[in-house]
Image (tube, rainbow over all chains, first blue to last red; front, side, top):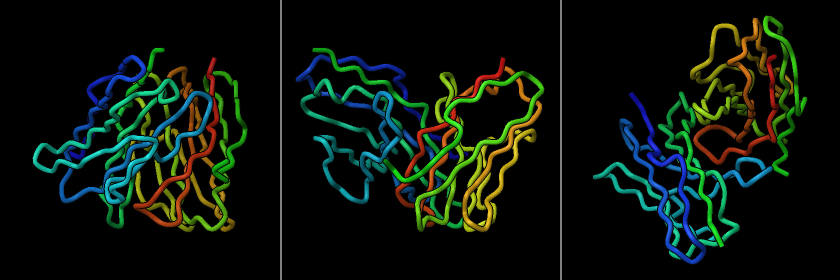
Amino acid sequence: AQRVTQPEKLLSVFKGAPVELKCNYSYSGSPELFWYVQYSRQRLQLLLRHISRESIKGFTADLNKGETSFHLKKPFAQEEDSAMYYCAPDSGGSNYKLTFGKGTLLTVNP
Amino acid sequence: DSGVTQTPKHLITATGQRVTLRCSPRSGDLSVYWYQQSLDQGLQFLIQYYNGEERAKGNILERFSAQQFPDLHSELNLSSLELGDSALYFCASSVGGSEKLFFGSGTQLSVL
């Protein structure tokens, strides 16, 4: 069965510290992977997608097919990074559906 | 503003009742998705429509149904409501599938 796991429900770091939000997936084929973010009182929005290989707001995510992981990383966390982060693998194909992990609430303390 | 509009923003109702949530996708987007967000389950995919037809189904209860109309807006109908149905219901849209989703601000449903 297709599954995505975000093992940490809560993650708290201090400003300037590195942060890594974990995501592991169990999918057949080669899924496309996304990270979505929900800031306080804002809509859920796309943060980045693995095929873009880009860095958004200092965040990067590398797809590790061997470990079936897509961890989100930032070397120096900022207070404005505090938000709910969702990992979302998509199996693609005609029966497209984006399945989200349960999310990790990141709190960056001053 | 993502361009996805959801109404109403808040809905308070009683157990056993039926409600309808409405979603207008971004202009040009053909796909509409419905998600349920709760504290314990996170963001659960319910159902997807593409250009009026059901495309994919997730963890949607039989008491729930949805449709997408010719003008591409969508409605999610929740009936025989239970306390456990209290949640934030999100709608999202995309041009087709397997692409960036744009989310609405959600409808907060409270079943008392």
